Image 1 (cartoon, one colour):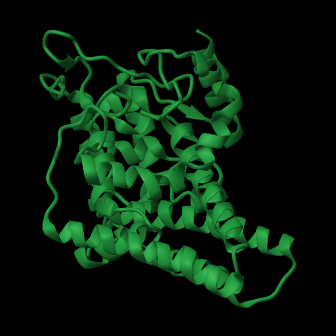
Image 2: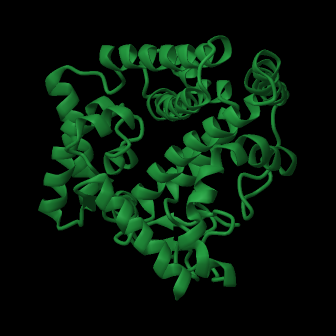
Length: 354
């Protein structure tokens, strides 16, 4: 599928905003990457994940306690993804390249494939946000996420089954979608086929074997077949968190799904304005939400400046809002996570019915 382009003839908004953000870091003598607070949080999250995993393996406890710990482990896996893997994948975790790589490969420790993620997320999603056929994150099997996607009979019921698909998304990602990408060589249905270097082939199979060993074989050996239930609870808890956070940022009532001109293949908006029209913030006033989500509730700032660490988003947020107001650019935001969630549910309900 041929790539689209954005309007690049007149970009006063983008140049002004970039200058202001650059001056902010220069004036305050700050690096745009992570800082000590991020490193401490990362060590804490990994330590919690390891402690929960070991507790489930070696401690005897009532089944309801085990189930609660499995939920907590799944949520912790998601927070590791939000705070550590995501930052490393964007090279914003640290000024040191090796530390970015280590943090990015926490995805492989959770069974995913960072090689695929960087192509699907960094390139497709961040460049062509909410563009059908190019942003593969909005191509969700059995879900109609925007009006340009065909409506099937079962979409009428997506308001009732969405939580099942969101819940199994992490398990499907690790056990099916990665293999689909591996054998097809495509990041999405309409994507071009790409070959993998030998190194990535070895890492892929090593990752999948380690995942099976750490999260299935060892738990079954230590606990018994009931460990499969624990694995399912962990996977559903993690998947639900990951899926919901993405949907609240891009698939709500106010976000747009632009279509390129059929002849020129061009979207008339400049790229930064496109990001603002397809992305929405939520709960930016909640420090707890920001801490847990690694600043992904500041999704607008992240999409405008993906190489800047989330620890700087609250300050950048003020610059972005002021510049948007000055240039008359709409800035999308929900005051709370609950409001954003309700907007998402209304959106998918309407798309399933009409």
